[in-house]
Length: 428
Image 1 (cartoon, helix red, strand yellow):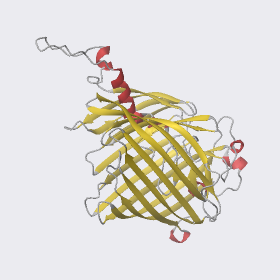
Image 2 (cartoon, one colour; image 1 turned 180 degrees about the vertical axis):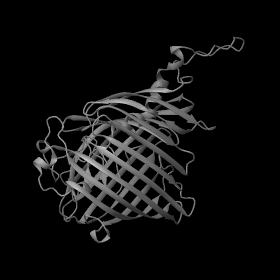
Image 3 (cartoon, helix red, strand yellow; image 1 turned 30 degrees about the vertical axis):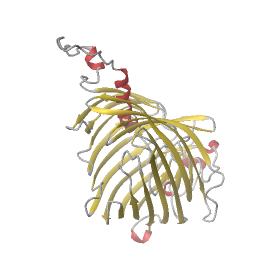
Image 4 (cartoon, rainbow, N blue to C red; image 1 turned 135 degrees about the horizontal axis):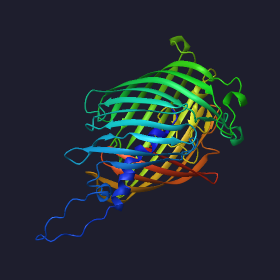
């Protein structure tokens, strides 16, 4: 799915809460005999994280491909008796460089370590519409079964296509409207809290429409006859074997997660396209003291039968998110910058806590994380996955509100240019 401006700035909630806490002045200790200070009022009430009725978060999105988006997000937090965030309510009003004024609404709930749900939706004056509702339970895998369901509708006008291959040219950049809807349901049998066998089924409808952003040709102009232009539908089946020893699903500091998967889309099962894929992913975390964590990941994806696959189903490299069995990050470039049948990616970052604050009823930590991403896409099954890698160094700044919320701003550098991303959860 393409990233949307609705989610990025608002989901950097914890990061901005940390910034507000850093600005808040800590009063000097008051002698026991002194009368208590009156609560702040007026503007001081809004600037004090302990008394502000909501968090007025500025929305500034400069993610590659998305243009400049500005706005404001009044955000309410609800915490439990342990000062952990259990609900985030965050509407917004924004203005997009490409699509005019827009508004969104989000509710993200974390009732327990085992269950979470969220509902997000929004639209802009032109082109873009979105809805995402999801429910997950059994995440700690202490029971016999874990399951989740998610429904998405997304109409985005900012995706790009540069052609196929690891050396696709910036000069071949095209744009299109990506209009798609899907329902993804998964169920996993937990043999132990670490070992799970999971199955996912995902019906999806995708429509690729012509659209010309200023200065860019439409996808069909430069790539006529490309498989995937127009409308297609698929029913994807994926099986995964997962071994997970991480100490936290969202904010891990030690342990590892290993996944091998196999998937298929078949015209015989009602899809308009057909292809198959398999691959593996590894994530490893090691703590060096209480404030420093090394995070590393690697992934490989192969498509042995992809002759009838649409371009949007191929292996993808670029952007800031790792999506298992689909795409991997390369934070010096925009989403889906490199596309081909097969893909290898790896990366590491050193997450270092530099400060902690009490803000908005919870404890927020501020992290910096120098990182490097590397990867490539390639067509042949026998090609080396390790040669001619694209590499992007960068620096991340994250706000962490344990145990459920991570907000981030990551800046990566590819070919001397900076790419800026923001959102929720670690990239991997």
